[in-house]
Length: 335
Ligand code: UFG
Image (cartoon, rainbow, N blue to C red; front, side):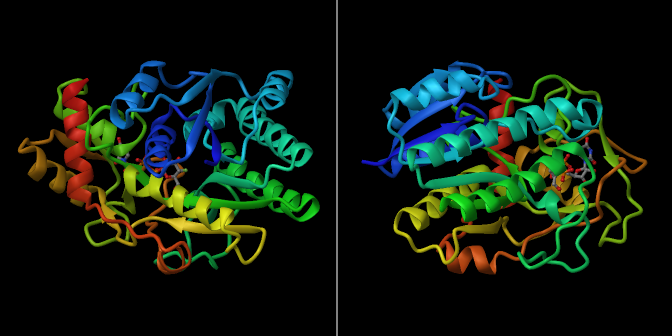
């Protein structure tokens, strides 16, 4: 049985990926510093899969702690989620973002190199494309200068991995996520935004639940079908399964080059107003919202061309926007 280290394994995408790894028979060990989640998630994973993953509260910025973890564990592969992810905050605290997102990555790659750990999956983002010139976005689209320190950590992160793969003969896959939403059907794990949510779906569900007075729709003057911005919202369970597909590709040595990257989305673009309409339908509620000005740094539209991911990773999304919103609403109601 392969033993997979999942960093940030108690976070939103991490916890869903741990569940899928366990379902596929992998042995999972989680490292998380609990900076943006709680320890309850570990029990909730256990409740879903019947298996409690090994867990260590370690901060990956502390090199000695990372080193002693690897001294004591034999790991076959790493899925690296642990990172800061708030675009706006990254503009205020760029050095925190570089220290956490880049420092941790470097320490992990050093351990991999020193110990001949071969397989690495990296959480990247469609933010590397900026506002792409052509839609849907293929993996061949050029990367654009990052709009935020957060986005820059994903671009630099990919570069560091690519160069390390070349120099040290590691094998890695970067998955460029579009917009992950929803949660596991058990409603036992999900997104836990701290404070005021920055992302659309938690803001919608909190507004419907009466926690927020109204949703501000950022701009209706974009050159899109209804004037609101378009994104590719992917169910987090589908996204989690992309990690399993990528890991299996590395384990079975099917990768064509030692650093590969894939777009992980649904291929379908939805506008903010379409998301609101879908949400109102599945939740049978009326959402209080108001159109306001554009949010700084937002792009007009981004959705994935998933041809390469579908064919090469042999992976497909199976869940609809409605299903994801229904799950997100049930999760909100449970909170
Ligand atoms: N939006 C609103 N009101 C809100 C929140 C969001 O109208 O209260 C709109 C945004 O303007 C955008 C869409 O809803 O058009 C989606 O916004 P999110 O903040 O949910 O997602 P983003 O696409 O802006 O950001 C996501 C990830 C980032 C990543 C980025 C890559 O959250 O980590 O995709 O493009 F960098």
